[in-house]
Length: 213
Image 1 (cartoon, one colour):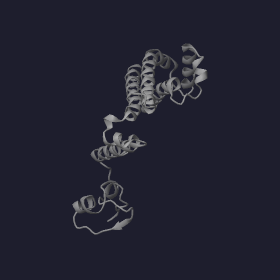
Image 2 (tube, rainbow, N blue to C red):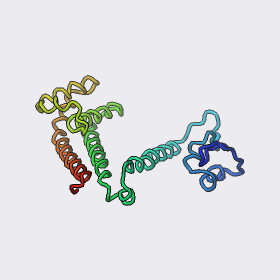
Image 3 (cartoon, one colour):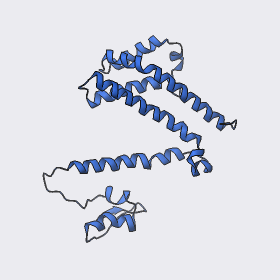
Image 4 (cartoon, rainbow, N blue to C red):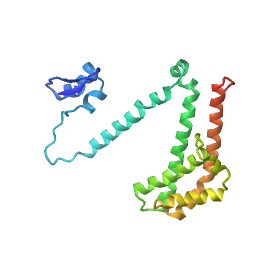
């Protein structure tokens, strides 16, 4: 069986039992990620016309999700961290800075999911994702830390922002009436989240300037 070892080289080994193919690299020659899951060859040889069972699809989904979250998050959070912050995440203000907008995003998406499924019983996955993206776009337009185009937003009234946002996303095929209801229901939530994010950002900047937390 061929797999990638610790040095990133493809090596070929013989095995007698299926367990050796799955576990041998994990224990002896390589990390689990670089052994079975991404091996050029699989120990399983399904017959022609065989359809993968749902349990296998669920397993693969869980593994991919684990990799994308657990393996990537430490690299993101540890970037530019001090040794003290890397040793104890609770001492890292950057962790909170990154985590806050992400938790706000999850909450906004959850609210949109609930509202859209009540308003549009037969909504598809793609359309539902567009409504979530529309609300996140509104959040970013109002409170993006990059502040690109903030002059136009600063001089716009709430009604002007609503009109611009509704027209933009109605152009993507979303229901104008539903967009207006989303705006009216979630605008206050977004402004509250934006204010909290601004306070967290100021705390982080004060920390960076050694003026306290």
